[in-house]
Length: 356
Length: 241
Image (cartoon, rainbow over all chains, first blue to last red; front, side, top):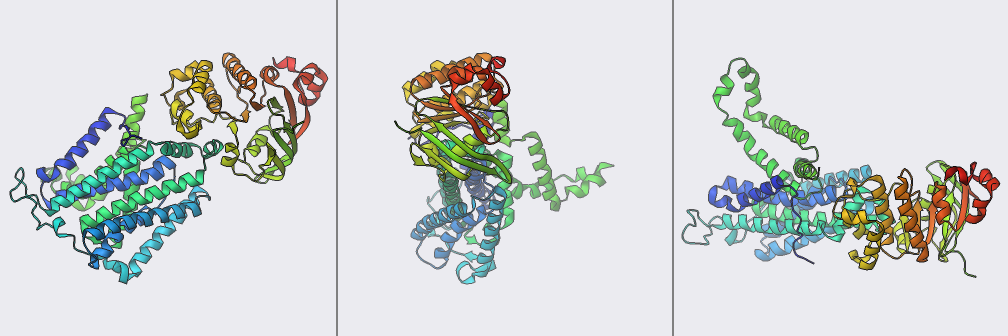
């Protein structure tokens, strides 16, 4: 079996956007070396993995789950808890990451096995209940999770800002522990994304797509739909946990609001829908777009020239809408515009246009 | 004498609160083509879906190759060697023709001899091998559905109204396909309203009405007996050619 899938975004524009995203993420620390830019870049890389893992469920298998943040949180807490208790450095990260992924994959597959026999809407309700329960547990189990306050922890010295890998700056930029953390996250995220791409383009992925289109037909060909769906859920949960572990490394903090909030679940859904379900490349673009909007839309409104607000007639009308605290409104407008222009998501619609 | 490959005894099926099959008795002999006839709503498609386990029989028994399959799950039934071509063509429209084929192969690899045989019969599928099945015409989709069932050796092929709404040229191609399968010794259970095709390929016939098999016998006998045709089906075969 080839290590790479050979799958392409399917349209020159989509390919260009993906390459642009990759190049921007690779060059980011040297172009914008600030903590905010690197934080945004790392967050994009992590959410690319998280959204792509959700696409395995929603886009490739047709399963609507609201519990994806639970597995994300398991991965994050699995790294944070041992580090916060001072149980070693790199060993804790590695073992915590592996343990989190295995636990999340098992739990995700178990939830799927127990509840996928019911109708899709009931499965979604079960996952919603699981997400609420996880939020409650994370808040209540103070001794383990730190409760509402969460857990703050220290990373191994090589991943701290004080660490210098090179004595001299490279291309005018200091190569420190923060940059190492960023590239570690980026490299792992890239490997995980390629692994998911390999999976969805394998015979297993083909069966998932067949099940998504018509489960009865797939069964009549001899495929056990529940088993395949449970395996897909397990894989998606495992990858989400790995993304969670990366998130913990980036934030050096894990709390219910940072990994389990329903806002994150909504963001993941939007990333997949806006990017294009069942394309994997689409959720990657969706993740970049939404993380960028979250980070920079408010800033962009803040820096909107006063002249726009001072314009006669439209100034008094538009002015209040351009206030920085109205950024969510513009985010909504942007989403509606994208969905209108790209009904099957960005990559999905581009692929359809290419085929037509 | 060996028993039939497939036997249904007193099979009843409920779909929700509707009682569709009222005790179907049917035997499908090995190596023969059996055609299931009957007006719309007689229960033909439900019978096929019950055989595949897609609807669960509420009473009665189904045996395949001497094995009780009444309570078996659909994938297990399919793995016994039953290929099912449903009424709605059964292709995966978002996948390519190649991917549709691969789904039907054991281990995801083609038997080149069989693949070339299928291409010989349906050359258009070779031309459209890497196109999505959703872009095929209705007839091409039906060819794909039948071709997919021919890619692996199967003990029984169940086909539900393959010619529904198709052009005569495509029907001729499908008749040829079924004849080839029959010559190769494949057992076929075919639901068909097109009497020309039914008579061309059928060895045996079973007529259904109101969820029961009301007649079973040789196709040749039914084709020769216009009174029987009129009684069972309300119309003579000649009127449908």
